[in-house]
Image (cartoon, rainbow, N blue to C red; front, top):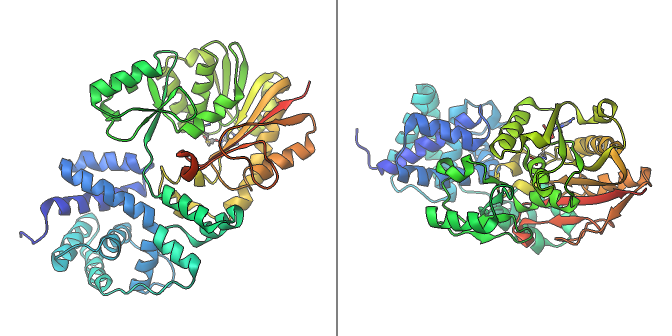
Amino acid sequence: MRRNIDETYAEALEFTVRTLVMAERVKPTQYARRLVAKEMNPSRRARSISAGMLYNVLTRRGLLDEITEDVLDIADDVKDLDPWVRNACRVVVNEIVFERLPTDLKAFAETVADIVAEGSNPGAAAIVKGFTFDVADYEPPEPEDEIDRLKWEYYHPRWLIETWLNWFGDVNEVIELMKANNRRPPLCIRVNTLKTTPEELAERLQEKYGVDVQKGVFLDEILRIPEGLPIGECEEYERGLFIIQDEAAALASAVMEPEPGWTIVDLCAAPGGKTTHLVQLMEGEGKVIAIDIDPVRMNRLKKLADRMEILDNIETHLMDGRKAPDELGEGFADGVLVDPPCSADGTIPKNPERRWRITKDELERLPPFQLELLEAGARMVAPGGVLVYSTCSMFPEEDEHVVKRFLDEHPEFELVNIDIGDPGLDGTQEVARLYPHKHDTCGFFIAKMVKVE
Ligand SMILES: C[S@@+](CC[C@H](N)C(=O)[O-])C[C@H]1O[C@@H](n2cnc3c(N)ncnc32)[C@H](O)[C@@H]1O
């Protein structure tokens, strides 16, 4: 039956709901999207509409779930719903409450119900159809207070806004940060300077793909491409002439200032963005001992290094980094980089759903683990060697506090001033902080220390 709903829009709805369901099983979301695109082969226009819809659903996810729970009157959790119902409800709330669409509610409700019936069962479809009409009558409650208003206006969880306010002190600063988190950042690429130059590659990408290529803000080897580079079809990418890497992340290797011939340990190395950069910075002469505990991510590191043709400079060890000094020895490395797992609130501009995944609990659980990794890394630094600690977190709990605790116990290490970005918080000035709203990068933290001889 032909309904009064634009066919391309209907196709985009289906593509979005199916991607969201797939993304609950397969990570990352962009990979799930590619798998669904292969199965569905949606039109170009539907892909483009769905890309925007998907981005908005991921950005607003916590709020969409809150409204869904309210409308369905399930006191507990959307987690218990059938995945097709859960994700269709997210799209429905996004389209009706936030986007003020569609014009024909009945046709919209039937279209979404059909998508759910096909993916799940008629009972699930009936729930979503009834839900759609209820959402159309939904009146959002008045904000309880200023934080609640900010939460609904800028789509961030309340506890995150409160925590940032606590650290940054100024509400306008937090608003600017949230606005930057809601802007899609330019694609940042790092040129493989062992194979080409930034100028050559920029010219080539501009000519061949008609894209605008801008210089990095901090590093010559970084190029920024606001939009339109078809990475999947890009022969220059396949040939390892560049990799995708945020400029702030690239700064972590750059501040180490490694020299050709160095031996460097990268303690949490996979998928290899920083390891491969370190090899580049040593001009292809030297060795990086790349350690990681995750075999899948380690394979990605090897593939990346292979594509860049620098695998010979990298020695990989699949192990718990905390055991590395016992296995590999102490005091031998010219440089050690510790880039441990973190809450990753700095990556929200790239991964909009991240804001809904981070928990307060992580801020208590992760720092002791990060400190253990830093301690292990430090044991491998040679006298006079360099120790770099970096995270894509903006929380001092994972940054300055870890470094301060480490330095309190290790007078043989001294902080080196890094004059990039903003200084540190909570009394640790010498480190570098980068923010999406100030530096147009991901949120990032870097501390550089030397082991006194
Ligand atoms: C922030 S990521 C590292 C990103 C990497 N430095 C890069 O630039 O591509 C953190 C890494 O730590 C690894 N990891 C987690 N626990 C670890 C452990 N106990 N020992 C070593 N690596 C660990 C994770 O598998 C993950 O790859």
